[in-house]
Amino acid sequence: MWKDRIKSLLGSAAAPAPAPELGVSAQDRTNEAVQAGAAPWPRGFPSEELSRPSRCLEHFLAALEGRRGSGVLDLGGASQANITYITALGHRMSSESVLHALDTVWHDDGLSEARKIEDFLEQTLNYQYSTFAGVLIWDTLQFLPPPLLQAAILRLHDILEQDAVMLAYFHADEKQTLVPAYSYRILDGHTIAVNPKAVRQRPQSLNSRAIENLFQNFKTVKFFLTKDHLREVLIVR
Image 1 (tube, rainbow, N blue to C red):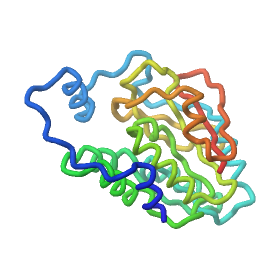
Image 2 (image 1 turned 135 degrees about the horizontal axis):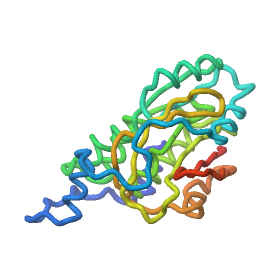
Image 3 (image 1 turned 45 degrees about the vertical axis):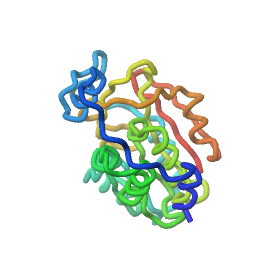
Image 4 (image 1 turned 135 degrees about the vertical axis):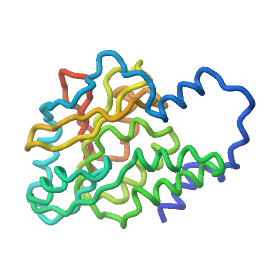
């Protein structure tokens, strides 16, 4: 069962987190500002909605052709535009909000790390094996702490059909720790609307090699060159 595989990944269950020490560090204040949506907008990142071409989206949709009636999962939360577009192609659409689950589960200091991971997966990826032919990850995975990220990718591998595809975006500036999170709307087969939501802290830097290592159990990981701050990645199960 997938829960046993998660426990194996983590080792023995972690004890509940200790109570924080008195005093607030600069890093703590930064984290609080980020969680409250009060962190300053990073220079060089678009702060208003814009549309951009996406070759990765083109390849994602092309891979779904011939798989009419298959399930597609959107991890950016429910978007009526995305639901309408994907279902019009003949697919079934499910939506989950990875970032909402991250905010509500991961910052609960009363839970052990193992319990947080289990609760997160229950909220976002609680589906049967081989349920989906495609997953729209968008930019969500880069905001997950390392142990949660590994567990989520393991679970994604399980709920995907053979040769299923995933679309993922990562911010290309590897040194920037505070980056915007966006919502994404599919405008047509090769264009998306990118809408800024809030500034978030990335818990780790993910260059191309690190991304390849994350998906080492998948068949292929393909990168698409872009002219902006987003690195596009297509992953095949």
